[in-house]
Image 1 (cartoon, rainbow, N blue to C red):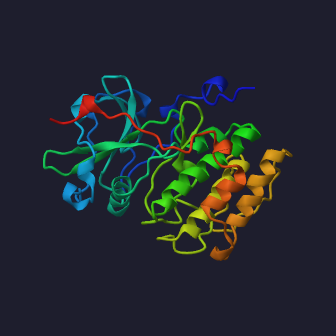
Image 2: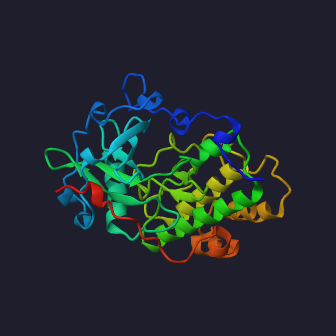
Length: 319
């Protein structure tokens, strides 16, 4: 049986089912997710702490993109739009707006520009947009058709072989991040998106900056910053989310497998791996490389060991 989330079961379209998010301390307003809007109408309040390009190492290696070349399709969150360019390819425009933690935006931007994060299982960083004052207004990222993995797991149940593949792909992306010398810092199902072929892409690589219990409810055993074992704990929690079918994790508690899992051999291994990743002592947790090899390597995630080469956005570069 082919697993076809969203359309096959009459779910709402992607932008309608995505979570509506409002900036902190803001009043609730009607969302533009319910209907397409013109680019000129999408004008969120920019952060007072917009970043100058000189503050981000190696940013000059990436394209400065012109917003005029994009056509807006819809809004996913209050600062994130799905857009497309003349060749019909879609991208996500993620603005730096008031109400979001400036530390997180800068940490994510530095991750894309300062480290080799090109992987089949990490979202593409395509470039950035400047405002009229020459400061960074937005990042332009690759597009994933099915948005967050949480929207697929709830209320649907994925076939066990697909769950196992997702675990391998998440681990493969995490292994690439660790090989670059940084951590993801906010790994969970809501920061895992799926492309049109239901393959995993990791997003929001914030390097452990500014993590809060409000975003990630389960127990955090230690400070995340610069600790790969913290990412491995988060990997265990992410596997817990997948195997539970999108269950809401208990707030600030240890994660245990107190729910029924399909009696499928392909799920026994991810469950055992998750339990080791969730060990209280960081020294008892495996590394991403160990987990990936245990799962079967590139054979398990169905991708090549080579990196991917992204198409350049020649159509929307600024002159």
